[in-house]
Length: 398
Image (cartoon, rainbow, N blue to C red; front, side, top):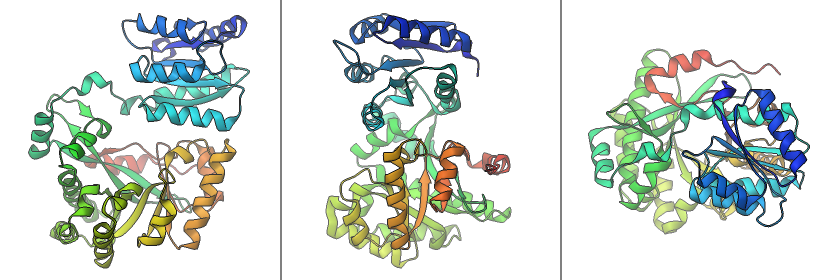
């Protein structure tokens, strides 16, 4: 990573500690650094910048405007590309603040406990470079709803695939299809920017069917090349309100000579409860046809246990919010451990998403998780690049 290209801001009310942070950044090779003496001062400096800095290091415990309020403003006004929370406070509070920032749509690289050291800063800042290939500024994704709907109809929205591997032997056993809008100008728009619009326009079910159709097309092609994989596809809540969805999905899959047993449909917790009676009927029919059913983002909603009791799920996906840094955050570890234990008792396959470090891999392996998905294994890639991505994968030596 070229540290000289990174622009970083330090928000810290204690002058001596602020100077130490700036010196440590200079030692890392960060040549462009900004500083703020408190939250209000930082916001004033940020608003005057011609472009948002890459990373803002924010101390939480400051007089006047504290770091929590400051991060909220940074997120709402999009004054930075990413933040790092700096504090010597309770880890549970740090996690809450990070979750708040992500809920605003702000990228959070993690937290750093005081006192700051060069190693701590390097460990958290290097994550900015690790993910930069997947990040795009909001300005790159300016489009109209008619243009989006036209793109869906023209086949510009396609699945990219992220590998899923077994903890036991490191073998790649499946992929998740993740929507990407590949625009004619060569830019790629992330799903977070267009999927909510498709849901609002009532077209998210069409996106689900496109991902299923294209995903199975690739599944068949990989199978001919000797790669036997399972395919996971996210299902729109709209589909669960349509009694005919189960038959359509079966027809799509079988048109590619793919068995429903090789396809896992991922359902978010909130989807089923929109119309419980109809949704449960659709899910039961999908399971009857042989499709796997995964409860996605487990633990992020309020009806998790009720869903597990009502729906014939075959898989539980532990949300990345709990997986990331679980090895160093006791509360996250407790949630992961409880989720895996519950899944074992219900005889469900477990998938951990957001696996980014060897330490988290090791923890999940020790806790008996079945399958890993995340940046440690590989980022989402177009179907044509998947064989090469799998070839690059090397199981961590523990």
